[in-house]
Image (cartoon, rainbow, N blue to C red; front, side, top):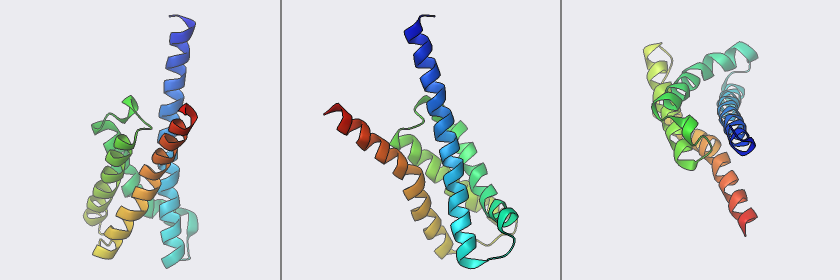
Length: 131
């Protein structure tokens, strides 16, 4: 393997790791904001209790959508976003957590902003650097 190929592999791994960690952190931020707005007790475990269905949905979307191929693309972000919301709501319903229309709408909008939004900003920065 040449030095250029090695750099490409290393850069690819960094992008995958960065995207996966960013997705997880932003889903945790979404859960923390929601917990803060509605329930102030039991902060750490409460955030994870709220976030785990969405984290699981995002993880499933990573696998099904093969997100590692283009982890920072907006299309991949859309797959992760929809997987996180759909999977999250299904898992919440199956485990007896509430799923109301208002929450679905808030989750759709918030997670779109977070999971697709940072990828859109990166795309904009890349475009501006090329010009």
